[in-house]
Length: 169
Image 1 (cartoon, one colour):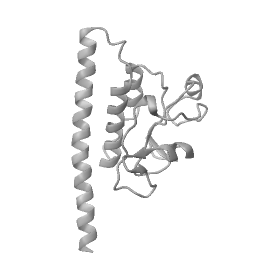
Image 2 (tube, rainbow, N blue to C red; image 1 turned 135 degrees about the vertical axis):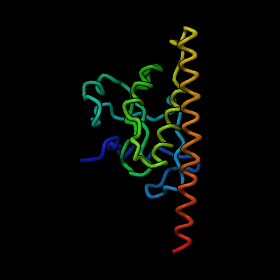
Image 3 (tube, one colour; image 1 turned 30 degrees about the vertical axis):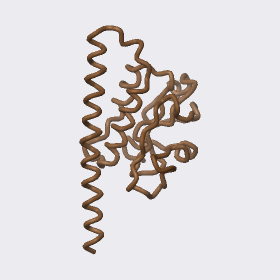
């Protein structure tokens, strides 16, 4: 049984996920993926079942994003696909269901928060009409942005430690 927060990616979703330098190689952990805005994400098969979503829920979504792949476990999701027509609140609700556990790697947490930030910034915000709701949205974006910065630093430190260990052996 796969660990929690690890959902199988369809092969085409793996192949379509790229970082700034091109396709992400399955064994290349030194290059972190960059999240793609919702509007430009390729679609996946809405009938694919993921451990923490009901099949009927997936069938109701006509077009799905590719989700956020797990950089430490190729072929697995950190966040499975969500509807391209999801509202801000639906996106937040979806991402909150898949928050990385405390024992997740810095690479996994960085991928999660970079993806979350990219999606939050890309999703239409017309529904956020009240001042307090707008403030909540801005505070959320700032908080997620601080998480990205924190895990970028942790990930960079992990890479440096790994290089030092390789150099000392």
